[in-house]
Amino acid sequence: MKNEENVRPPRTADLLFDYLSAKSLQLYWLRNWVPLSLITISIVYLTTVVILHTFATSPIDEWVYIDYLVKIPSQGIVRKGEIVDPFVLNLLACHGTSPFGPIGTACGAIPVLGDFPNAGVSTADPYTPLYFYSAFGIGQIIHVVTGLPELTSWRLSGVFWFSGTVYVFWLLLRKWMVPNFTIFVLGLLLLSSPFVWWTYTYVSTDSSSIFFGALLLFLATKYVRSELKGYWFVACAVIAALFKIVNLIAIGAAAAYLLVDAVWAWRQSKITGMDQSSTKSNKGLLLQGFSGILGLVLGALSQWAWLRINLLMAASDLSADQGASHPFGVEELFIQLTSFLPGSITSGAVDQYIPGFVYAPLSWLTVVSVLSAAFVTLRQHKQFPVVVAVTASVFLAAPLLAIMLKLVTHSYFQLPARYGASLIPGMLLLGGLVVKAKWPQWIFLVYAISLLGLGVWFSSYLATLAP
Image (cartoon, rainbow, N blue to C red; front, top):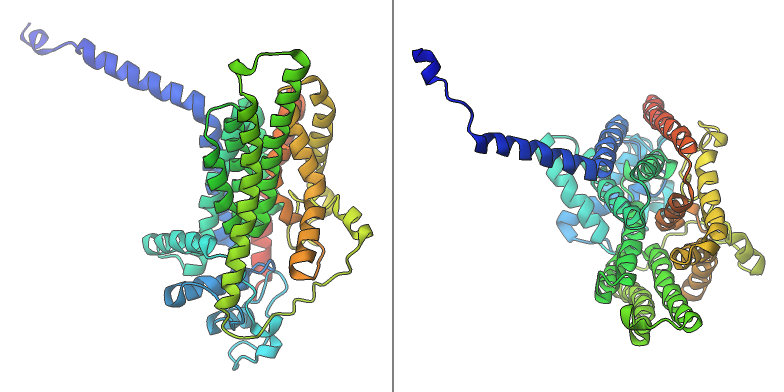
């Protein structure tokens, strides 16, 4: 009887607290399982790939990016005409690039600059230091906390870039009411792509491209729906351009959406005679279109200003001849029309070890997404502006960038498909808008998981080829 008196029943308040906590966690998971799952899988996959990498550098200019990071503590930036640091020359001589092996003077010998690419002259000076500061800062924290080599830690900064990218990608597609499962499948396909493998597991200035491509479209969408002020879009556009000049493509696509939507809304109001007091006035629509153009212009001007400053800070008259010059003409512009749509998501550096048909479905997905959305949207007025903007950008961005390159630098080279990476979120968004059936999504889910396994195997295989 005494023991029974000492047993106190749980208080109602405690039971209620436990219930609400469990309920809150369950609701949080149901609302956020897509980004939580994608970020977790991304961290595990990309970290595994980075750890498997040797000190051999990526052929996509990683050695000059490493040189930039090495010089940050002593000089902050890399100036035009600089010779790369001896540490980097030794890295090339002893480890080289993956999977081609050592480059330049024999490992352990006194470096002879003429033996190295570009005669040892850095080509990273045109970039602003923004990306490199982010990679250096994140990498140093990882290095101090884990004790991993600095090069490995700098590469792991890509894991953070992609985690932010996939979160913003989720925000964008959720804003357009794409189902959670569809977003999850598209996110896994993006993660499993060759572009992500090469970009986010090595030091790469392309790390910001998909992030800003998704973020600018997301901000533009919120602005169109009166959920955000236009100056946020303009400010983000300038920051995106300063991270990398080819991010002007992302700005252009989002600006095109703002402009097309403004013209479309004005036209619809004239046709239907709808009172605009419940939506945006003509002044509001004009400001919306102007904000898109302003963001693009200020982004371009910010890059122009940086390039002028870069010239004034030049360390020498040395310049790198990368041998990439190519004849320019009307025929070349037509060729550029298909530079980004089929190949951006599958772009990488080495493809002789994995047959092209393995990754071909990723290209097919982007092509079908864009083309099918262009037909379906004729019946979906709300989606019409974004579909037109993304479709036009996919085909016209490369020729326009080529013309700008010729006018500004008086030279031209064939634009690699990876320059269009900032358009990938828009392509996948269009896919999410038109893909409704579940069975192809399940097929793509299995395909994406298979590619993730292939990515880990490929990393391990390349490590066996390293000296």
